[in-house]
Every structure is written in C-alpha cells, then in structure tokens.
Length: 109
Image (cartoon, rainbow, N blue to C red):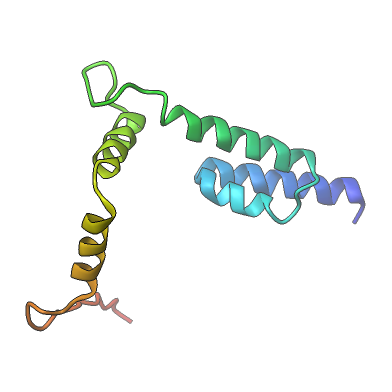
C-alpha cells in the first residue's frame, strides 16, 4: 500500500477511537507521535479535558453537565488529606468484616 493510503487509514482509526472515547483516541495516537492526525487528537483531547475544569465549583442550574460533576468530585477529593486516602485504600483491600463474595455473571453457552 502507498504511504498516503496508510496515513489516511491511521488517521481514520485515530478519529474513530477519539469519537468513541477520547482517552482511547489518545492512546491510539501514541503509536505515531509525528503525524498530523496525532497532533490533532492530542490537541482535541487537551481542549476537551481542559473544559472539564473551567466550570465554577458546584453544580448549579446553569452547569449540570459532566464538567460540573467532575469539578465537584475534584473539589471533594482535594479537601481530603493523605491519611484519609490511605484509610480508604487500606479499608478497600482489608477483609476484616468477614468473607467477601464476588458474584460473576455466567453467560449462557
């Protein structure tokens, strides 16, 4: 195949994954950092990620989107100390409450 055709196919793949999930598009773009399509995907990812932090603190009637929720979660986690974080992590991995049950869904064969 010619180089132009391969570059066009790679660009289509990057944009497709970016539309599905911007993080997937970012990871796919890491394969070829020097291409123009990778630059565009990186730029779009940075813009979309930055928009999440431009909303004011808290969820109001004007700001109810994902960015407001991410900002609210960030504000809540920023107020926690490292000791609180360590307690959460050790509590998650500690099985002091008794036996933990993990339920796996079985698909019919």
